[in-house]
Length: 343
Ligand SMILES: Nc1nc2c(ncn2[C@@H]2O[C@H](COP(=O)(O)OP(=O)(O)OP(=O)(O)O)[C@@H](O)[C@H]2O)c(=O)[nH]1
Ligand SMILES: [Mg+2]
Ligand SMILES: [Zn+2]
Image (cartoon, protein in one colour):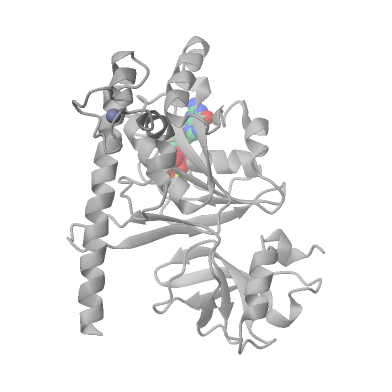
């Protein structure tokens, strides 16, 4: 059965979660967060009693008031839109460590309930392998599927495209890599194959790589503001300032995000293992099970580096991420202990 709510991505798992909630009344609202501005969530909704009806969506605003909500979340809101009653369990969430000077570790949920994450890099910028590795770890840990998108193919010589793509593929490995131009439309149809019916796709990347322009090209609209990059260093000007859920003509949803400067790890899952699957696979062939891949004899990783199959920089990058994750886990544990002592 299709209605406006299923078009919004209200799939079976959310339906079951709603059904299992107690104390929910038909007059309350069930909706999805479209945008968050200064403590207010804008959401698209119907009355709980109408989840299976053929009614159209309303747009409402509610104060977040301490509720942990992100764009893409499914929320139950009181009938008068005064408060968020509950946030439905997320099927995936893209989280980074909030960038702050503070020593305290805090999480920032960029978006929730995603199926796919487009990791966007511009072909006219020097390739940023280390950043892409981090983004892949974050994306794998989110529970959604990453896809790498190389934009602005019109801005470099056609003869340079293949080498740039191959270079990125050597980092992305099994993750699909698409070359596109929002100006000429090149590659957009192939990219659309990742947007299944009702799927939600987040668009992530540094400022100025062309995320909002890509969102406009895929939706065939001009809803997202775009901004010229700075001359000289090709950097963006942080044109997009809020995360935004935008409908696609193919019945899916795109989430445009502001360009992130830093991609700090937050969740420790199998992200590093998946982003560096090549090194983990090699490590199974090291003589010692606890091989550090430094100076141990019969180290399969060092053998691969000597043969030029894996770069030294990639191994160093993995080590940095492993160390960052370990330090973060210690910090999270300390904070938890302090918290439970207070309670
Ligand atoms: N030549 C070319 N320019 C593009 C393409 N896509 C985007 N641009 C240009 O790149 C600049 C930045 O584009 P935006 O879409 O605003 O970039 P963004 O990633 O959304 O940046 P933030 O919102 O700051 O994070 C604009 O001047 C766009 O016109 C493309 O495919 N080809
Ligand atoms: Mg933008
Ligand atoms: Zn080894």
